[in-house]
Length: 292
Image (cartoon, rainbow, N blue to C red):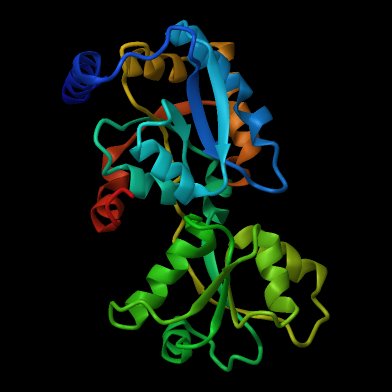
């Protein structure tokens, strides 16, 4: 661990020990994340809960929130001890005092290459690029995935705002609940644009190659970094110790990594946590809104 980071972890733990309210000895630590309709994230997080329990010597409760925005709010409010975040939730929670990023799962290069956001347009929209979409956006409909979804809304809205000269277009945004459902909302002409991760869009195209009235991908992001596992130090939770446990090469750490990867398709194939690289996220955090 680098010197300044070790000092930061130590000072945060010291502050927490002196300032945080004492928790009941038998109250479980909370491992939080957000639900997704087609994935069993409670099961995916169970091995990581085991690592936390072993590192902290405390019981652990897995708690799933409705969406990334709700998770970010609970982290900022101090209701979550450890959390597995998407990028959008981290860009909000990064500003919350006392929240420390510990580790990330790094997918294989071919998987990382596919983790991109795309903006889709209806064939009747009459645009073929993001500038055109921004021009006609006022009053149009956008199907996103969940509040706070990075690849299913936030990145595309940022691209539209940039194309409009920095001002977010006045779209009517609805939430489909999943990437696949957002694609289908566009196919059924229930929306003018859809914000989704690239993989389900590629899959839909492959299964519908003969259709003449297909939606069109009018913008594609660079590969997106995953969100980190974060920790809030308390008298019962040593974040430095948990970081060391996550970054280990023992079977428990690898099981925890594989479990998280099973719950996040953009991380498929990952089997080890890597140290959080602050430089990769610095510009994104600086541009993000403050924590809720």
